[in-house]
Structures are given as structure tokens and as C-alpha cells.
Image 1: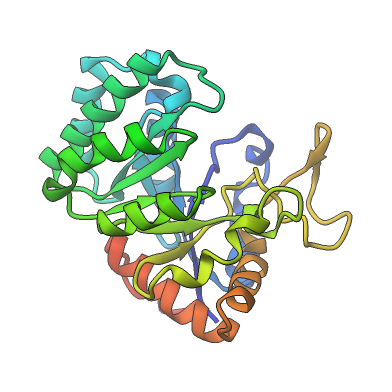
Image 2: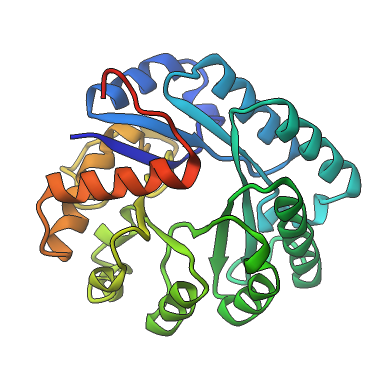
Amino acid sequence: MEWIDICFNLTHESFNKERSEVLERAREAGVSWMLITGADAHQSEKCLEIADQYPECCRATLGVHPHLAKQWTDAIAARFSDLAGADENVVAMGEMGLDYNRDHSPRPQQRIAFEAQLELSADLGLPVFLHERDAHHDFAQILRRWRDNLPAAVVHCFTGEADALAEYLDLDCHIGLTGWVCDERRGTHLHPLVPRIPRGRLMIETDAPYLLPRSLPKGTGKKIGNGRRNEPAFLPHIGEYVAKLRDETPEDLAAHTTATARAFYGLPETADA
């Protein structure tokens, strides 16, 4: 089976000394491509450096996360435009959006940075990788203004309710699912929603090193801080869990989510997939 991980935070410090080993474990597990996700200007450039270093399995996104929206400037927009125009390993813009759960940046600044990045993405003709937490109404309202000018959009790590899912599908968005769906404490509300995501709209992701699936055997993952580290090699576990919720075989789910991600990001076939 072949899998594609649409969100991997490989710039996280816990991976600094073993990037090649982590990527190799992922590929041994059947993960052919990993999207290295940008969260601020500096990290986005690092994502692109990594994608350029490992072009056989990595691509990059450029974006400013809503937590860091207060950092957004016109200079960052210009830099992202230059990078995206010069390097084909930039395949999407993001992570961008709204997060009213933690409010690490003031909400007005989040909305300004989100809309500015949507405008930039439309100008560049690139898909968008989106973050929304407890901000469904404002998020959808802003996205709706730009959706027709964007080639594609994915709401990553979907954790919302039925009304949010319906609106995002109505906006012709793709939906990304993480190990959150495996969490018996806070993910069970997603279980009846997962089968409602049409084929061709669903993609899966680890969001590593975060969101280690709680349904994995105890002790799985390298210990970091007070927890354990997620990594792309665990993506098949998420896929198998999602497949059960959809009454599909893992092979079927792997095939259609991989085809969807490949089309969304314009990823080539891989010889050793």
C-alpha cells in the first residue's frame, strides 16, 4: 500500500538529528510523499530547504500559522512570492487560517493575515492548506470570498461538527484527518462524520510530531518532554482506523486518499511506491 502524509512538521527540533532516519522509516511503512508544513517565515524557508534536500519524498508549503499571525508583513508576502516562483518544490501555501481556541495572536490580526495569504495564494495559483479551530463562522466567511480564485483548498486536521463539515464540502474543500480521530477522549464525535466525506475529498495526515494516535500500543514513539513523538511511519495506522470508520479496506482507503493527495499537490508517481 502507498500512503501520502499531507502534514509533517519536519522542522521540529525533535527531528533535527535524525531526519534521514525518520524519512526512511516512513518510506519503509509505505509513505511515499510527505508535505513539510510551514508555520512562519523562517520555518517556511527551512521547509523548502528540506524539500530541496529530499526531493524524492518531500514537498513544502509556505505560510504563517494563525498562532503567529501577528508576525505577518508585506515583506513576508513578497518573500513567499519569490520562493514559490523560483522553486517547484513549493506545492501549496499554508498553514494559514483562524484559531480562536488559543488566541495566540489577536483575532483581528488573524483575519488580516488569513485573507492576505488567500490573496497571495490566488495570485500564485497555488492550493491552500488551512487551519481552523473554534472559528468556523469567520473562517468560512473569509474563505468564501476567495474560494473561486483558488485552485484547491484543504481544511487540515478537521475536528469540527457536522455543520462545519457540510459547509466546507459545500465550499469544495478537501478534508484532512489526523490521529485526533483515534482519540477516545475528544475524537469520537468525528466517527459518524468520517463516512460523509466523499471519495476524492479525503486525505490523511500525521501532523507529526504532534497528535500521536492514542490507539497505538503503549510506548510507541520516541519520548519527548512529557509525551511521545508522532512520525509519518505511523500514518498507515491512522489510515486503517479511518478505513474501519468508513467500512472500507485499508487498501481501498490508501488507494483513493493517495490518488487524491497526488492530484491535489501535483505529486509525481514514485518508482518505488
